[in-house]
Image (cartoon, rainbow, N blue to C red; front, side, top):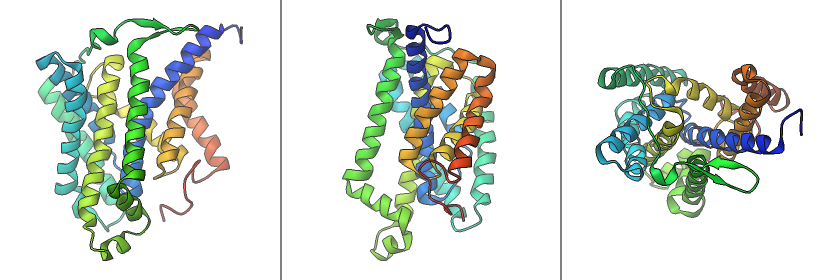
Length: 295
């Protein structure tokens, strides 16, 4: 027993932290990818996460296929991201950092209001498919199958993104663009098209997080608000624009929230901010961040 808590209960809470951390990682990766390449602080990220959940819910309701919903939801939200970059965000490149921030902040209200008009203010239940329902005995704990699936799906998404960035020509161009976009332009590469694609990928990751979270948290218009705030905490702790930082920080903060909930649920909502403050006191640019990135 640890502080009166059995090892099985503690392990179950650690696994729950991995599930929550996985959702944080998906959102923070999208935020970091967009910021790292384009220096755009996307305040509409939580709204796109919410849209991913709703679009997944609609596809599941129409087809009965969770797997199709898991595919179509992120892709559809990614297309929304491509349209947003081309029609709105692109016009603000090269201007003050606050301009795209304010634009996406306003866009988030539009996206939430649109969902309220289309689906109403009442939340919807989104049950996992039968194959992922129930629990499985891992030997040391009994844990819901769907939550294990979320951990696995997050790991696959992170590995796929790593492979894209580290093992493909497109990834090489993206990484080069984050360091010196002018040099990439001089090589004859259309940087605007790369930014467009990266923005869509970042938004699609938010949509994937929304679909995965929906069976656990339900689907409702304000579901992206708290997740946006917490995801920005993850990005700041990991380091603005750092993808490894987003992964490590997401897992750490998932554990902080989960374990705090176990010992003192009332502190869970503020513990992530205490954790952020402690990290920034030691590392002002975050765990993996570069000093002066916002200058």
